[in-house]
Amino acid sequence: MKIKVSPARRIYVWISSIVLVILCTAMVLPLLKVVAESFSSKTFIEQNQVLFWPKGFNVDAYLKVFHNPTIFIALKNSIFITAAGTLINLVMTAMMAYPLSRPEFRYKKPILMMVTLTMIFTSPMIPSYLVIKGMGLDNTVWAVILPGMISGYNFFIMKSFFAGLPGELIDAARIDGCGEFRVLFKIVIPMSKAVMATMTLFYGVSHWNSLQQPLIYLRDPKVHTLQIKLYQILMEDNTSMVDVGQVAIAPATIKMATVVIATIPILVVYPFLQKHFAAGAMLGSVKE
Image (cartoon, rainbow, N blue to C red; front, side, top):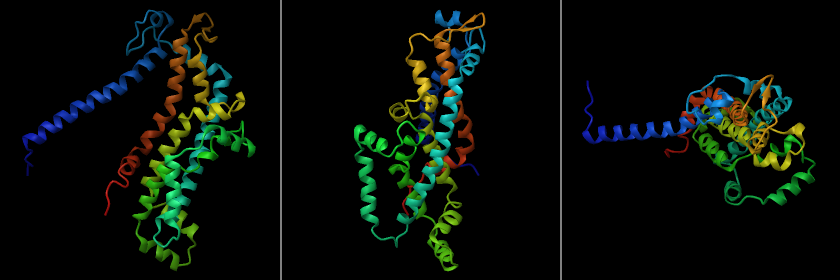
């Protein structure tokens, strides 16, 4: 049986498709430009002849970037901060969202009000730095992990999802003798794959792309992140990494190769979370 589609609906679909194609093109073309320049030779880069396809294809820029030992140190630090930070974020956010999602929890309103205030007012930089320094976290990776353990926005998304879980199942677990921690980690979290995948993506991307906090707290090159290294390269008018053997490399090519290297991990992880992310993106949009 064919479903009749009204002319207005057809027009809406066509217009939406055209707008989405234009938006996708506008987002993809800059990425193609970066990738093309990262694989192009110095001659074509200097003559501004590279558009969306490499000219004078070579991988010398990537060889030079990976030949720099500081890149691997920064990459290792970024991976650790992203992995450890995301894990801590998920655990702490879940531990706060679960009790506040239960109707029997007392003092829920004042706590939610305090969380809301953190989304409106943020702490100034100097007091935050003094607190971090006073705790002995300055110039350590924990200075960029611990202060942001719980995001107010992500907390409310997770709380909304937990509130929609069957209360009868949680009550049955309590009757069987499960404590609240066991209920959370054995029942609630396994039933919340969509929201956990969404929060993993949100927190992970935030940690991986973070620049301001690392620039403030991570001054020792041994704890620099990949984003700091990328920032340093992009801010250099001229870079010392211009030769690989007898091959000359344009500074712009080095910069573009570094951008690609910093982007690849997120592009690799996203497809594995896309299914759950699509479901989690609609969390809280429908109120029963």
